[in-house]
Image (cartoon, rainbow, N blue to C red):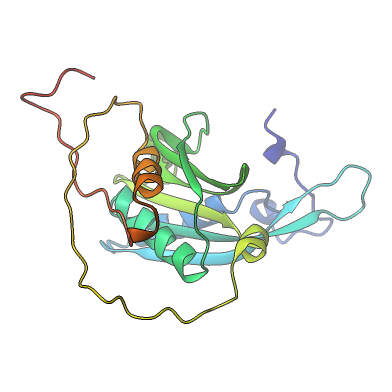
Length: 216
């Protein structure tokens, strides 16, 4: 009963596999990752800009939704870094990164949605092992999907000159003891709020669990 199963059917398809218009761009990326994996390409990082075709009730034609889809082998933080660099280039800041566990495409503990002012504009995470197995991939795969219309609406096209600082920068390492359920983005937001305009950047670089740290 997933809404994405409601697809636009093509009257004169070239074959059964191309008989409908896609409502989700991620399977196309998985197809290409699968071909690379089965051709023994060990390091793969891909992207696609393409449409999803979402039926609109009462309308003859679907809504064509442009997306940027990313796919790679590697680790979650590599994908996260690519997305962060893209958003920084577009001057999209002060967005939220929240854990998501109910999307069957992704591993329930390794998926996050991106939102700004309460509106979701992307999702990134590790593909669910059962999905990878369905595509014949026996390694961890990471994908992300960003809604281009929303990115373009949020991006800041204004650029202004900022003078060089009078004093050299200083770096501080801060260790914080938090509950497992606290997202890293929440800690980062707290640091940014407390530091104010003096802060240039914050980066989580290590997570320690072990001797001296209480369970959970």
